Length: 121
Image (tube, rainbow, N blue to C red; front, side, top):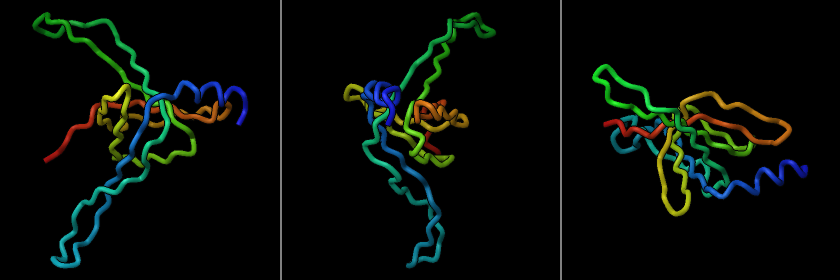
């Protein structure tokens, strides 16, 4: 690992758990069910937050816009549809990937836009 990579990763004080969803046939019922599988646990990462100035909606109320970006190693696979639970300063928040990863080979990391995880019923 280069000096730049080591320096960058020293900033990664957050931790990420990755959950993927796979269709598995229930042997007892024969029904295909979606099953949670842990694909990664306690992976070092870094969240970055960027807030845009509030914009008004049609009623004139200010609507703040915040974008969340995850920095994580390029070796970490995050399949589409995964749930990412990121813990920062003892607070865990669930996110979903909302964009394609931007890869930075020199720093050996990738940057992924996130959105809050929405549980579907």
